[in-house]
Length: 443
Image (tube, rainbow, N blue to C red; front, side, top):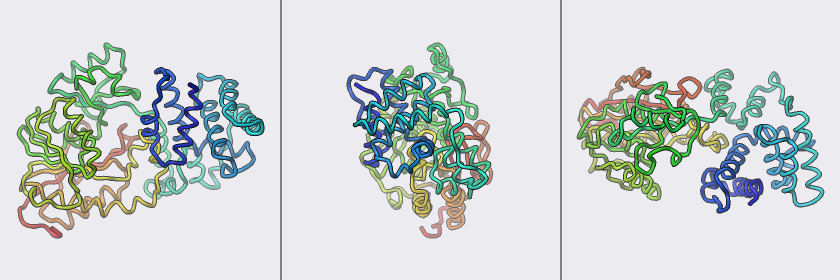
């Protein structure tokens, strides 16, 4: 099987079908590819998706025409070629050009692709860039492969200098953080086993209960996957659950639970003695929670379908702890989900009202004195600080609670983690307590 041809097929499906690249790869894993070829295919697809704005600028510079004027299939061939020339040092330029050009359908397309790719080869140490002084947003867009509308959005939040640092971190291959299932093996014993097997693993730089492997690793390639000794979870997510102060026998509700990582972490911290109700609005995702808890051997995690934006009276005042990790823009996990950079940034403004509605409904499930966590995997203040502040303002029987986990310390009960500062996903954590049983405003 020709790996480049398969990559081209997947890229065409990606451009035309609107399906996430990781889902395309998982649903089109074809028989006949060994591990090396599968890794090559995955790298090709992910790199083209992640850097296509950058590649398109180079292509249009040497094609002397806009990418909109180039046939879609030919454009994807050129992207594959540019990807190999620029980002795959192990592939000789002549091989990258010749093998990729052969994907073209006719003599004219092959000549065109050959010409453009050879120009990229000749100039790959000094490829063109739009002048920064004329249009900084366009410069950053091309350099880091983000739509200009997204670049302007981030600059508006953080300024150009901080935005560039953030984008640079998004374009690096992220490490793999794992949470050890300490109901089965100690963190120290599991870390020792990883290092004995040759993995570059160590304790997370911000959280003593999380282990970090320096590179991206498929979970099944790690020791003890089938035995349920661990699960993959960014240390920022585990930090949110550690901040919750879970205790043995606690009654916990996780209102937007899929795929289940926060419920799993809470049960592990409770030494498998908590009573956890894990809900999600998407019935199709419940199997992820069920499968995960069974693999990990965790007890007393019940799973069900529920719309978190609606208050369910049977749950009001019943729980010691609340996990409220709401749907968000995902602007903190772009390093792990390249497709996220191309989402319509304008649609982000629709999320805060829903997030506030979910938080307001879910908070009612806490007992007086009960503690909740509101969290997102975004760095957008409108979804984070502003939602939490509005919640406290309109619901006076709750109060923020400061927390400290690992090297992290909150301010006014909240903290935002940034990839380029903390080395984690972009993530927001806010902690609060129900201080009164009186009905709150809007409840």
